[in-house]
Image (cartoon, rainbow, N blue to C red; front, top):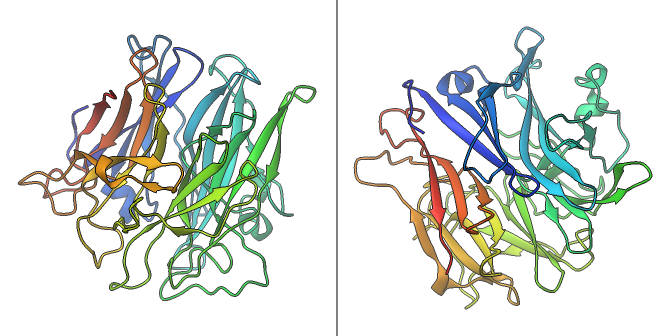
Length: 405
C-alpha cells in the first residue's frame, strides 16, 4: 500500500479466524501524535474482512477512533487490538487488546499503564462482547469509573504480546510483560525512567480453558519471571510464545540493554507446565553456543503448517551496537532448535534490509504475520519507516510472502 499523504504512514494489521477468515485493520501513524505525547497512536482505523483467505474483501469500513483524550489532553487512552484467533473448542473468535494509558497529569515524564483485555465473538467476528480484563492480583475492576484510579492503574498491569497460543492441551496462552513482581524483590527505576514503575518489570502468562457452562474462559495467571534492571533497563518486553513438539512452552522476550557497552540480546525461557511457570530467562543464542546481537526490537515465533518447523522472525545485527534500539535491520527468519532452545545459525535467512539511499534509522521491526491457509505461506505486513531518509512517516506498507519448501 502506497503512502498518499507525506508524513502519515499507512499501517496494516492482519488477524486470522475460523477457516477462510482474514481481517485487516488499516490505520495511519504520524509524527503529530508523537509530538503531542500520544506515542504510538494508530489513527483513522478502517476494517475489512475476507472469508476466502484474502481472495476477495469487504469494503473498508470506519471504526471508532482508538485514541481517547481526557483531562484536557493530559491523559491519552488507547484500546488497541493486538491479535485475534479462532478457537474451535469454544467456537469463538478471541481478540486480545492492550488498554494503554499515557498520563502527564503530574507533569513529565509521562506515566504509562497497560492492561490486557479479552473480547469474544460467537458470530464469526461480526460483533464482540464486553471486554474482560485479565488479572493476577487484587485491584479495582476495569470500568470507565476506575480508569484513572491508582488502584486500577497500578494493579494487574500487563503489556500483552501480539499472539494467542492455542496449546494442544486445549488451553489458550496469553503472554504479558510489564507485570508486577513480588513486593519483597528489590527493584528501582533507573536514570530518567519511571516506566515501568517500581516492581513492574516481570513477565507472565495467562492460561485460559473454555468453560461451556459459563460460555466463557476460566483464566489462571502464572508466576512472573524477571531480569534485574542492570540487564534490562525497563524489564522484560514484548514476548512471544510457542508450543514445542513435546508440549513444553517456549517464550522469547526483547529487552532494552542498560548501558552503551553492554551487548544487546533477546532472552528465552521454557515452561513444562503449560505456561504457568517458566525458568529464569537466559540469553537467546545459536545452537552452536555462540551468541547473536539483537537489540530492543519486536519479534515473533511461527510454526509452519507446511514444514512443521518452528521459526523466529526478528532483527539480528552483524555487530555490537551502542544504541539499544537501533539499527532495526536486517529482518531475518531462522529455524529454532527445539532441543537446544536456540536458533540454528545455518538457517538464518534475510527477508529485507536497508537499501542504498534509505534512512540510516530504517525500521524493519514492527510487523504482523499470518499464514495463508491454502498455500501455507507466511505473509508479513510491515511499514518500512524511514525508507524516505528525510521523514520517518513518509513510508509505504508492504506484504512479504515467504514460501517454505
